[in-house]
Image 1: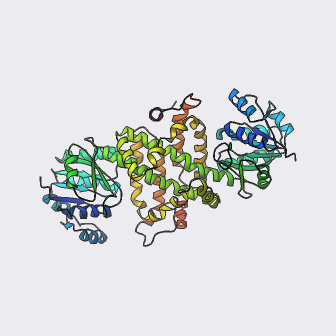
Image 2: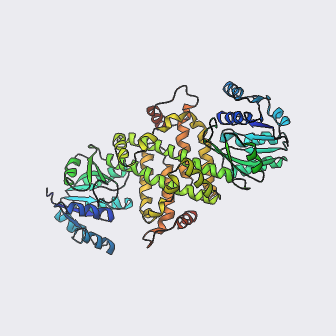
Image 3: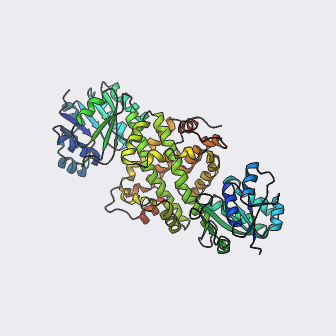
Length: 281
Length: 281
């Protein structure tokens, strides 16, 4: 297997940063610009990714594919790769449920490829020590070695497909779930006319909450992408026989905030709470 | 109005502690033991509450009633008092939705009484500085004065019925909602076989969570009472046109844990997670 080349499909900020990290460590990173935005092209070029235009062209030049895309697109990317009869190693690093990871594995393996489950915790790895790539599957250790010396720390969680996705789901269940919950609580406090009183009580007995409960303003532009992730997490709870309602609620919150996709400026808290109070669509 | 006597219906740990606090400050506190447990009787006696046996007997001796009971019983207590044609001042300090507080007000006022909405934040006031009683309604300031010098700090939130209940709902939406969420996440991590990996990642990037995520063990005995509170909070979100799923999920978590009611010893985390994974009932 040619370990010196990897294709990343379809790099957004995270995928492009991972690609840049790998390319700085001697690995050639390919991507396919067909159908992707100018923003993606500018970013991928800056990160040293080589544009091979189409997915098919990438796959002809690589034995390894890393899928890093919004959760709702993960299975489509797997199908696209399987449709090209890819026989190499496919790593799905997307924020999908363990069940969806097993589904992606079946798609890739059904076409003759090999599958490793992945889950990313932390921001795009533009500085060292911030981000982890959890990996599981029989060839997980092999994938981890690709990241030797890079800014992304690879951690192997054993051979079961679903473990890496499960870890990521549990992690984001709290970070993104609690952000959605706090945003909804501020909206309720405002609706009931008790926001100032709540902030005063929080300042006394929950001193991190006045600030945390407005953290959404810096993240609202990503809310559109988190709808699918919250639905994946809800599926993970449901499949485990646990209450899945929390993340149905979080998905609903982020659905309301999807209007801030590609917003030129960060919305104010007033704008976020107004969007949450509106009916979506 | 006779400000030197107040009836508390039906004192559990919180109501009894409030009664004890008031009685230490020169107010005679009555309660009705009929149909209540021996535990309640022992506690109320220790806190200096006077047993007048029946609700009717309490109401004949008092112009002020404070209702402190599990949320699911709040409207029944209001109906019981209204059924005695109580014309005094009724304070509902229960963890109910703003809408339920307005319903309780209509019940009390329909029978000729006066209503003040209340919401308690903090533990039973056995030491000073830990607990607040939020109050709203046209006679809220009058109620607040009863607590002058006591360990319970009374805070008036204006004249609208629903404000005090709304503040309390927002507060508990986070404290009890986030506890339920963290408990469910640990159960999911265990189901997926990644609990150790999650704890290791949390220790690095969310260092308060390893401990917080097992806080439920010290609170599981109260879970039965929180089911109703979570449902009230879900109603509050729904009435405000906001996603109510978070607290439907929290109610489901606490429903599973209701088996620990009156448990002689604190359950282990293993026991809590096993109860959460079982079908309830």
